[in-house]
Image 1 (cartoon, rainbow, N blue to C red):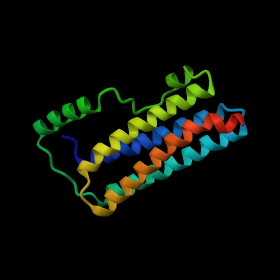
Image 2: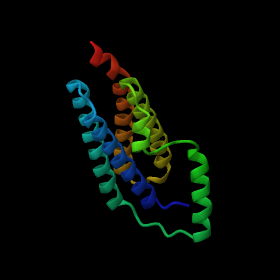
Image 3: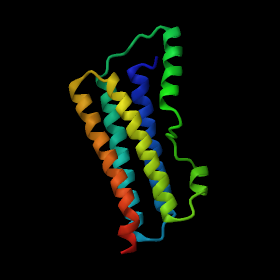
Image 4: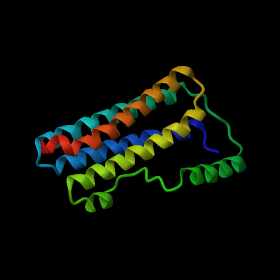
Length: 155
């Protein structure tokens, strides 16, 4: 089974991936409104990564039996299914339109929400759990922002 610390480390990496994706996407945009919105999303993802780093400091270190760890990792991977959790250059190469970009980013945000909802089961500390719930709400807000982004820049 993954330890809580390992799961939080994955969350940090997810947020860093998201921030890097949004910054890369912003650099490729000519539209100043879209560029600004993408940079703002990158800033929020960076803030989320910092929240998770802080959360990691308050989590007790789990001692996990290696055979349980292996089984837990397998269960974790199966439960996460086809979730992507990474936005790579290869993903960006398939982006041809703003709509493609928004759809890819929204899928990433939705996958991240699923992961964080699973992470809630591993967090016992009340303030850390509240912080995670706030991040989930921000990620949901990102999905809404992304879904309305195309409309905003074409107005």
